[in-house]
Image 1: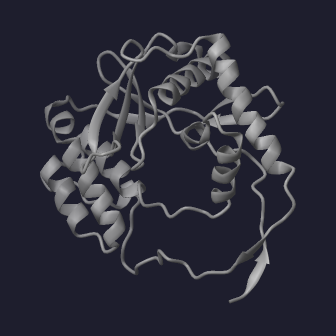
Image 2: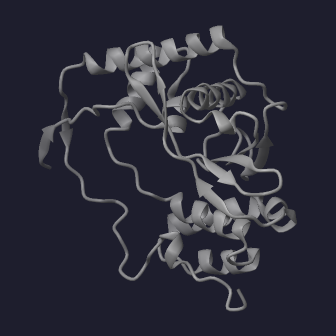
Length: 248
């Protein structure tokens, strides 16, 4: 098997990716950053696009499930169906409104780097609400979610003051430890209050410590492997190419 030298990432992963890495063990943060060197397959994009499409009323919940079942990649199909099934009550009972992405937000870090705070959406409901989606299998801890909320607040203070008064739907559809199924969790500013300034600084210092140790490492020899998730001809996941209801 052929080998090559590792290619370290030059910037911290965005928002929820970086937040999910922060823990008490700096070496574990380093290990997660090493893992981030390999570009992950976009297996959550179909779930996100169908979820948002139902929220906007582009198609019904049943239409979204039907489209997910037709998807060719088994891993993507399974993930999407699990996310939709766990979100059934929220998607079928909620009101419909346009959903648009916020402009990219950035948060300065203690080490002089900047953290990309994206993607975050704006629901044009009455009243407007912010929306963050977390569909990874491993759930974020309460501490990490509170950090995510605090980071979003600080980034909006810098770049998007008008959104600071809006409530938020922070939605996690993950599988808790010792559970056989994904569970839908909805958080707002009150269910889990954002970390305070001192707590957030400690959180970000841990992230920066892991980043510094990661960047100081020597290049590693890694084995070349084929793409385990090849693109399947004829499958398109962009929201603009999902099929809306004929009656829309």
